[in-house]
Image (cartoon, rainbow, N blue to C red; front, side, top):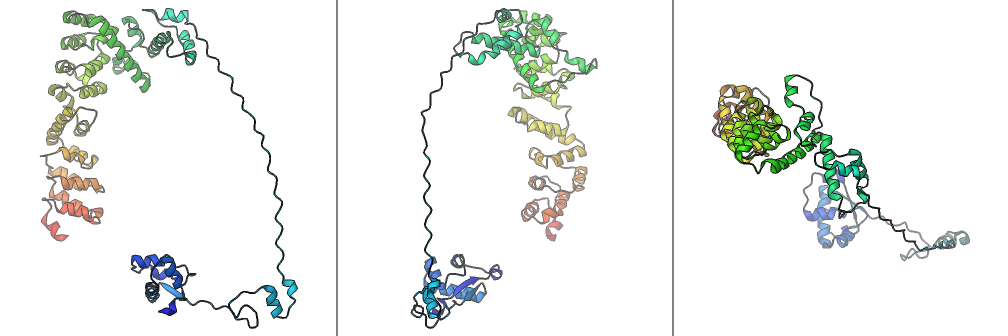
Length: 465
């Protein structure tokens, strides 16, 4: 194989695709470029020359490479320096051929261009910036101070002027707490909840039952602004309760809950005693705002049971959501909330992570109860809409014939649905056979294996696979 050393292998791309090469052969082929000889490849790859010749011979036999013979330089007799392997110039070649050698003398190299002088850069010292003058502290507005007095509304123009001067004030400024108090009062007044007096509160807040009774169309409300105003108002009502009602006896608070209005009635919704809560709900001025506060902040099952006695309150979405998120909701209240709900709505509550875990566990029991009495269409709709994920909570439940027929009449294209049915112990045989007929299941060996491993799979289907 010594005659291969001078040959230059060249890769034939059309024949390489179907070959099975070892890592050593693949590494050697990455170094073949058509210019290197076999001996050069041995030096580049670091392999033995004999091993390189053996691999090249195998690749040439397989048709993956083509061995190109090295081109011999043309022989020029009589030219000095070529017979002995040396080099010659064009002038010597011209003299050997009988031509004038002076015309073939190499031209002198051109002179390099003169270097361009580098421009001088003058450095100037940077002058320091003039110091920034500290802003003069603004004197508090007399109108603002008068507006902050107890029982009066703040002057919005004075607050606006104070806001414009806020960037220049320091955190240690003694007037800073007054500014925050003024801004809070102005924001609350803009939302319609600034004054804590009962008469002004009734003028600002509309009765939520007016829109439901059809007396007038409800105005569009910004959701974000409404949430901010509600949070600020609840904080202020709790402060009112701590100042006016917390120190009184239970009998005095119950008597006040029967006759109070406005901010006092809203503040009594934060009372922890269920008798006070019952008196608030019996008040003629009680509305959805009071019920929502009680449903969210009250922490006794007796008080929440009083709230759940009226179905018109439970139909309010915010009241229902706050009751479900209340950790003290009892079995009676939960049964009244979950009783009229359909199967899919019950499942959504059972998987809601904002609801306490104990409440979700109780809701899973309601799902199994409703599954036994729900219509077949509702069962099939729940399974299809959840892609079978609901079956994890249906331990001990079964499919009836109509539900199975509805599911078998639908084309299934969901891998999650097939996996859920295959893992459910009570899956009907007809549904398993229907899933085996789906085209994407036939093309998926893992899905076929899961379905065939189910104990309810019909025997004729297993024999036909």
